[in-house]
Image (cartoon, rainbow, N blue to C red; front, side):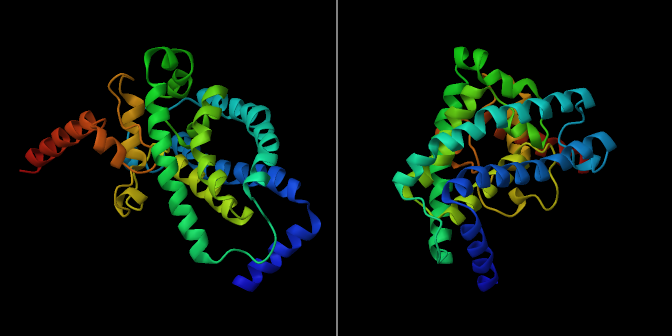
Length: 267
């Protein structure tokens, strides 16, 4: 596997410049992972598939889904791509590299874990700030237009929010100057995580059923359907920040009540 991966990487760095790979390459990978992982929940809603795993009974209209997709394409082309191009010199300065050999798996794993920790901490506080009255009204409310989220709504947001919370995602890589391979892997994992959290479905195979402290779709769905002043659950991937600062108390109360009702029903 490793020789095949390295030969594929050799082809990339031979035929494309560092700038092309770090900008256009990153953009293509992001768009591919995002839309391929986000479109299934759109289809599930339209076709009524896996309805027993859907967290909310309410569904989005095809028109609402299409409006989201069209705006996403616009945001990605007019915001995400220019930001990737503009930030390239900074990442080069911080030590981004694309040469062979590829980093050892232990380096990749340790950096990815570090990125998740940093991103979770910074995102929590940034997200919580966006729920203050003025910022919510003028910026963050756009993301909450979809009270019943589906995968692609994960990146449906005001351009200012895209830049503001996007800082949490790029801070870890900016601090470590990773290999481009690690950056692509991190970007893909982060996209998959946020799409799953906004999917609107809680499956038996959902990561939150197996990964300790992982929030997931059910956890984040509560954040979308509750009044913004009481929603809590501000965390990005893991729930420990909400637990530490008590911003998941309403969610825990609801879960406790729900468990009590289900228990009484079974009895």
